[in-house]
Amino acid sequence: MVKIRSDGCVYLCNDGNHLKNKEYMANNSESGSGHTPPKVEHEFRYYAELAKLPNCPPPLLNTERRGFRFASADKLDPRNFLPVALMTPARLPKLGHMACCSAYALSMYDTRENLIKKAKLLLKSNPKALKTIGDHFLEVSLDPQDGRHSAKGASGHFDFHSYTSFKPTGCVIDHGMLLL
Amino acid sequence: MNTVQGSRLEVRQLERHAHICDLIHFDGPLLSLFSDRKRNWLYLWADTDGVQRNRWILFPVGRAELVSYLNREVPLLDLVTGASFHWVLDDTHKTSTADEGHARRDSYRNLIRIEGLAQISEYLPSKESYFDESLTNDVSMAMDITPESFTVPIDGRWFISDLDKFSKSYSHVYAFLYATRPQFVTNIGERLGRFLRAPWTGGYSRINLFTALEQVIPAVHGLQIRSIEYASPGDITIEALRSVGDDIKLLAIRCAENSVAIRDAVKKVNQALSDNHLRKRNLSTVSDAVVPLDAQRLTLLKDRCLDIAKLLGLEAEIEILREQSPNTIVFSKAVLAIVKQTDRLVDFQSQGLLDLYRAPHDLNDGSEIA
Image 1 (cartoon, chains in turn orange, purple):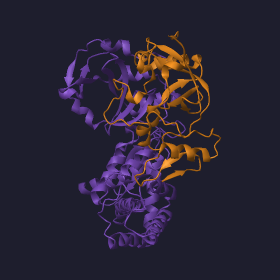
Image 2: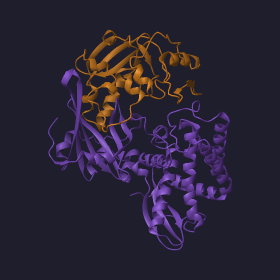
Image 3: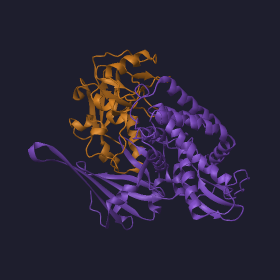
Image 4: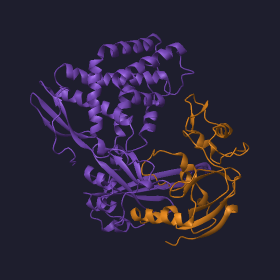
């Protein structure tokens, strides 16, 4: 059974039924939170994994937008579009570290400047941070048919949950080294 | 990655480290706070070979130093350089193709104690490495983080076994109150829900719940005894989150003053569970829709538990417990467990071993932390 909380978040009741993708979308569109009515034929790429996590995915938007993301030097490296939950080697200090919903999303920023700002902030504490997250950037153009994204935060960050139909290489506009 | 020289340690030592929260997180943790229930540990991600290995620097950090870092008074660099020792953890995940073409994942970890910082100089944070709340979702700096000293007034003649019983019940109630309130670590509520969905079959589960809750308390807020003044009257001076300590006192007083009404409600809950043979039945994974109890009895259980919550002044905390519980039966058992632990503190009061009505000492060093 799926319920909508007063804040619009979707949660699972504890009767062993997992949230179905289409149910999520249908309920989400009825929540009156201003989201674009979804097309139910789309399915999230990591639907099975998302369904195991509570409140996952949270309410998402479905609009066209530009995104900037950390990437490796090889523009076609498949890891550039792999969510962190599936990335190897897993950067988890302890076995059993909690999996979270956003680990199945692709981290993006709204501008290249905000991506660089984030890189500089991380490097203060972790001087080798770019070795694990990538020392290049990718600029992508995201279409409503590609997936859904969270609202951007104060830092310009947003999570992008792709649909199974998403073709990563087709959306790349630019790729280059991060100049810090 | 360079090879690190030092003394090889048993990785088993890390088993008692419980993950508390991430202090820096970007597509996974980059700085994590752990606790071995006595000390805070920081796990600082250091390096990767990009193929199969990640390297972490592990080091203990004192309460005062951690609080200073979180308050942006000192950079992370000071915590690393000021640590009494450092361990390097190389975490390797190797995927190989084994027999019959099935992929097999081999993982192993090496833990090395290093001398000095020369070997890890390339991993040291900068002088500007101050804590930044925007780098984590796990922490809310709007919450109280500084542990303080407060006293628990004692009286009468104590035996060693009294001290043991008292510390267990006090720790359990502290853990419950800590986990059901907004704290600077924001993921505790979710963990409470996970524990309540663990198999729940009787007394063993109750102890598991409290033990698990104690493990999610950051060491910076763990109950540390600063001093025991054993006299009649005397005091146990504890350093922890003072607001929770104050609430334990209020809770025990309310429990004592409303004991008749609480006992009556507890009896009704126990009766409903016993009559339906539910006391030792594990129902931790099912909802109210499928538990073997009709709606009328479920309502009775819920109402009596809410009565208890009101009598104890724990409406908000018990409501969180209700929200996180898979069903009303588990919720009721958890409420009974809280009452039982609080009752044990009340027993100390009625035996004259605690004097909760006595005004606490004014501790001059109230904000001092070690």
